[in-house]
Image (cartoon, rainbow, N blue to C red; front, side, top):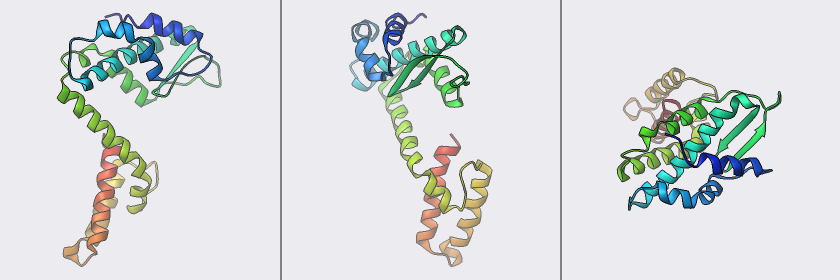
Length: 190
Protein backbone atom coordinates (compact mmCIF):
# COMPACT_ATOMS: atom_id res chain seq x y z
CA UNK A 1 0.00 0.00 0.00
CA UNK A 2 1.26 3.44 -0.82
CA UNK A 3 1.06 5.78 2.12
CA UNK A 4 -0.63 9.08 1.11
CA UNK A 5 1.38 10.95 3.77
CA UNK A 6 4.69 10.39 1.95
CA UNK A 7 4.33 13.38 -0.38
CA UNK A 8 3.36 16.03 2.21
CA UNK A 9 5.95 14.75 4.69
CA UNK A 10 8.72 14.65 2.09
CA UNK A 11 7.87 18.19 0.92
CA UNK A 12 7.89 19.41 4.52
CA UNK A 13 11.23 17.74 5.26
CA UNK A 14 12.82 19.22 2.13
CA UNK A 15 11.74 22.75 3.16
CA UNK A 16 12.97 22.35 6.75
CA UNK A 17 16.40 23.67 7.58
CA UNK A 18 16.32 22.03 10.99
CA UNK A 19 14.96 18.91 12.61
CA UNK A 20 11.28 18.45 13.36
CA UNK A 21 9.45 16.14 15.75
CA UNK A 22 6.97 13.34 15.26
CA UNK A 23 4.31 15.63 16.77
CA UNK A 24 5.11 18.26 14.11
CA UNK A 25 4.46 15.71 11.37
CA UNK A 26 1.26 14.40 12.98
CA UNK A 27 0.00 18.00 13.14
CA UNK A 28 1.08 18.63 9.55
CA UNK A 29 -0.90 15.59 8.37
CA UNK A 30 -3.92 15.95 10.67
CA UNK A 31 -6.42 16.46 7.82
CA UNK A 32 -5.09 13.45 5.89
CA UNK A 33 -5.02 11.36 9.06
CA UNK A 34 -8.73 12.01 9.67
CA UNK A 35 -9.53 10.25 6.41
CA UNK A 36 -7.08 7.39 7.10
CA UNK A 37 -8.13 6.58 10.66
CA UNK A 38 -11.13 4.31 10.98
CA UNK A 39 -14.11 4.98 13.19
CA UNK A 40 -12.20 3.66 16.20
CA UNK A 41 -13.38 5.21 19.45
CA UNK A 42 -10.52 4.20 21.71
CA UNK A 43 -8.12 7.18 22.00
CA UNK A 44 -5.09 4.89 22.47
CA UNK A 45 -5.84 3.08 19.20
CA UNK A 46 -6.32 6.39 17.38
CA UNK A 47 -2.97 7.63 18.73
CA UNK A 48 -1.32 4.38 17.65
CA UNK A 49 -2.83 4.61 14.15
CA UNK A 50 -1.71 8.22 13.67
CA UNK A 51 1.78 7.35 14.82
CA UNK A 52 1.84 4.26 12.60
CA UNK A 53 0.87 6.14 9.42
CA UNK A 54 3.49 8.86 9.99
CA UNK A 55 6.23 6.39 10.95
CA UNK A 56 5.37 4.18 7.98
CA UNK A 57 5.74 7.17 5.66
CA UNK A 58 9.05 8.13 7.27
CA UNK A 59 10.52 4.63 6.93
CA UNK A 60 9.34 4.39 3.31
CA UNK A 61 11.03 7.73 2.61
CA UNK A 62 14.16 6.63 4.47
CA UNK A 63 14.35 3.41 2.46
CA UNK A 64 13.71 5.09 -0.88
CA UNK A 65 16.18 7.99 -0.58
CA UNK A 66 19.19 5.99 0.59
CA UNK A 67 20.44 5.66 -2.99
CA UNK A 68 19.76 9.31 -3.80
CA UNK A 69 22.45 10.86 -1.63
CA UNK A 70 20.27 11.69 1.37
CA UNK A 71 19.91 10.37 4.87
CA UNK A 72 16.74 10.55 6.96
CA UNK A 73 17.29 10.26 10.68
CA UNK A 74 14.22 9.21 12.61
CA UNK A 75 13.94 9.85 16.33
CA UNK A 76 10.66 10.96 17.96
CA UNK A 77 11.99 14.43 18.78
CA UNK A 78 14.44 14.77 15.91
CA UNK A 79 13.52 13.87 12.36
CA UNK A 80 15.88 15.35 9.83
CA UNK A 81 16.62 15.01 6.13
CA UNK A 82 20.29 15.67 5.39
CA UNK A 83 22.66 15.19 2.48
CA UNK A 84 24.92 12.18 2.87
CA UNK A 85 28.61 12.73 3.20
CA UNK A 86 31.53 10.76 4.57
CA UNK A 87 31.05 12.22 8.06
CA UNK A 88 27.42 11.14 8.49
CA UNK A 89 27.23 8.08 6.25
CA UNK A 90 26.36 5.12 8.40
CA UNK A 91 24.29 2.00 8.26
CA UNK A 92 21.07 1.63 10.20
CA UNK A 93 21.39 0.31 13.71
CA UNK A 94 19.54 -2.83 14.80
CA UNK A 95 17.01 -0.58 16.54
CA UNK A 96 16.40 1.35 13.33
CA UNK A 97 16.11 -1.81 11.27
CA UNK A 98 13.71 -3.43 13.73
CA UNK A 99 11.52 -0.32 13.85
CA UNK A 100 11.57 -0.02 10.06
CA UNK A 101 10.45 -3.65 9.67
CA UNK A 102 7.67 -3.09 12.19
CA UNK A 103 6.35 0.12 10.66
CA UNK A 104 6.69 -1.05 7.05
CA UNK A 105 4.50 -4.11 7.74
CA UNK A 106 0.91 -2.98 7.17
CA UNK A 107 -0.29 -6.08 9.02
CA UNK A 108 0.83 -4.37 12.26
CA UNK A 109 -1.81 -1.70 11.67
CA UNK A 110 -4.72 -3.92 10.73
CA UNK A 111 -6.98 -5.30 13.41
CA UNK A 112 -5.09 -3.61 16.25
CA UNK A 113 -7.14 -3.58 19.44
CA UNK A 114 -7.05 -1.37 22.51
CA UNK A 115 -5.58 -4.31 24.44
CA UNK A 116 -2.80 -4.68 21.85
CA UNK A 117 -1.97 -0.98 22.04
CA UNK A 118 -1.99 -1.01 25.85
CA UNK A 119 0.37 -4.02 25.81
CA UNK A 120 2.73 -2.20 23.41
CA UNK A 121 2.72 0.93 25.57
CA UNK A 122 3.28 -1.10 28.75
CA UNK A 123 6.22 -2.92 27.15
CA UNK A 124 7.69 0.37 25.92
CA UNK A 125 7.45 2.05 29.34
CA UNK A 126 8.85 -1.00 31.12
CA UNK A 127 11.90 -0.96 28.85
CA UNK A 128 12.20 2.84 29.02
CA UNK A 129 12.21 2.88 32.82
CA UNK A 130 14.67 -0.02 32.95
CA UNK A 131 17.22 1.83 30.78
CA UNK A 132 17.76 4.40 33.53
CA UNK A 133 18.59 1.65 35.98
CA UNK A 134 20.89 -0.53 33.84
CA UNK A 135 24.18 1.00 35.05
CA UNK A 136 23.24 0.52 38.69
CA UNK A 137 22.05 -3.03 38.00
CA UNK A 138 25.32 -3.89 36.26
CA UNK A 139 27.27 -2.49 39.22
CA UNK A 140 25.17 -4.54 41.66
CA UNK A 141 26.15 -7.68 39.77
CA UNK A 142 29.77 -6.54 39.48
CA UNK A 143 29.62 -6.15 35.70
CA UNK A 144 30.44 -3.46 33.14
CA UNK A 145 28.71 -2.26 29.98
CA UNK A 146 29.13 -4.46 26.94
CA UNK A 147 28.54 -7.65 28.88
CA UNK A 148 26.43 -10.41 27.31
CA UNK A 149 23.40 -12.23 28.71
CA UNK A 150 25.39 -15.35 29.62
CA UNK A 151 27.79 -13.28 31.77
CA UNK A 152 24.83 -11.61 33.49
CA UNK A 153 23.25 -14.99 34.30
CA UNK A 154 26.53 -16.38 35.64
CA UNK A 155 27.16 -13.35 37.85
CA UNK A 156 23.57 -13.40 39.07
CA UNK A 157 23.73 -17.10 39.99
CA UNK A 158 26.99 -16.62 41.83
CA UNK A 159 25.86 -13.58 43.80
CA UNK A 160 22.37 -14.85 44.58
CA UNK A 161 23.79 -18.10 45.93
CA UNK A 162 26.10 -16.22 48.31
CA UNK A 163 23.42 -13.77 49.49
CA UNK A 164 20.46 -16.15 49.78
CA UNK A 165 18.90 -15.87 53.27
CA UNK A 166 18.67 -19.69 53.55
CA UNK A 167 22.47 -19.80 53.19
CA UNK A 168 23.07 -17.12 55.82
CA UNK A 169 23.07 -14.19 53.42
CA UNK A 170 21.49 -10.78 53.87
CA UNK A 171 17.84 -10.60 52.68
CA UNK A 172 18.24 -6.97 51.51
CA UNK A 173 21.27 -7.88 49.38
CA UNK A 174 19.37 -10.84 47.94
CA UNK A 175 16.46 -8.57 46.96
CA UNK A 176 18.80 -5.99 45.35
CA UNK A 177 20.54 -8.71 43.32
CA UNK A 178 17.22 -10.12 42.17
CA UNK A 179 15.99 -6.64 41.25
CA UNK A 180 19.19 -5.97 39.25
CA UNK A 181 18.71 -9.25 37.39
CA UNK A 182 15.11 -8.37 36.49
CA UNK A 183 16.16 -4.93 35.20
CA UNK A 184 18.90 -6.44 33.06
CA UNK A 185 16.59 -9.14 31.75
CA UNK A 186 14.35 -6.45 30.25
CA UNK A 187 17.30 -4.69 28.56
CA UNK A 188 19.42 -7.65 27.49
CA UNK A 189 17.00 -10.46 26.66
CA UNK A 190 14.51 -8.43 24.60
